[in-house]
Every structure is written in structure tokens, then in C-alpha cells.
Length: 190
Ligand SMILES: [Fe+2]
Image (cartoon, rainbow, N blue to C red):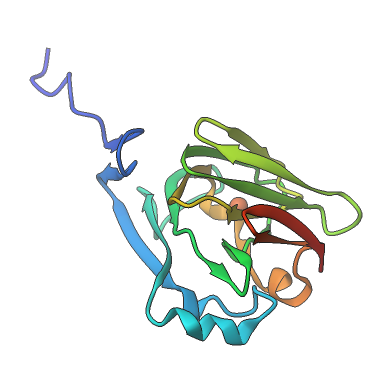
């Protein structure tokens, strides 16, 4: 038997502490609050956050440049708790350009909601909390909202070939916005 038959895993996904992802073929990226344009109702309020970080992402992809239809990637979004004029912190959200491509989200820490919209009359929000598992049908736009006081860390298993489409969201938004007022969650029609 070869010496390399038993090996270390290609990555470690912590489900403790900061829930960091470490390992081969990983790449980080980040976004500042003031860069989150076209998402929040009060765009001017973004500037009140200076150079605060909105969220950062670590992603493992062994075929970043040469992926094919079935290539999988694993990524974590770490979303800071903040609000923009009362509106809870969120990702821009996206559709899948290739709606045949489904996805899974899994909450590692924190609390919030996962917003779904089929672009027509079906929209809903699934509660997110440590351990919550979210099947995402590729026909639904999806967006993460952090409603807690801690980082919301969400793991995603997805297909790079899904072709994330953020532009349609920037143009039409989601049917509902999520605010936190006096400690209570309030949903307002777009
Ligand atoms: Fe997605």
C-alpha cells in the first residue's frame, strides 16, 4: 500500500468558534458596506458606515478557471450584524442564470432569514439559525439577511456553472424588505 493511501482532508470546515474554512484551493474576498449599492432602500445611509466590512467569503474551488457543468464548490459567507437606516444587513442576492442548478445553504452560526422569490408570485423567508438546512431550487432568487447581533455564517454547496445573476435583483429587488425596530423584526413591502 502506498504511503499516501491515507491522507489529510482537502479542507477543514470548523463548526465551532469563527466557523472558518481552511484548506486547499481556497480564496477569500470581501465587501464593504458602502460598496453594497443597489440593495438597500436608503442608499445614502451606506456612507454612515465608513470603511466597515459588510461580509467576507471564503470559497474552495478546485476548478476556478476550468469548471464544467458538474463542478462543485464549497463557500462560507460571514455576514456582519449591522443595519442601513434600520434595514437589516443582507447580501445582494441572486438568481441562477442556469436555473437547472440547485444549491444548498447550511447555517453554521448566527441568525437571520433566507429570502426566496421565483420572480413571480411565490416568495417566502426561511428562518436561519445554527444547523438550519436550506434547499434552494435553482428557479428561485435567494438572499441572506442577518437579523442577529452576531456574525451570520452560512455554508453553501453550489455549482460555479449556475452563473449568479445579481443584476436582475438590483433592477427589481425582492418583494419584501426586512427591518429591525425596537428589537422586533418588521417586514415591509418593497
Ligand atoms: Fe445561489
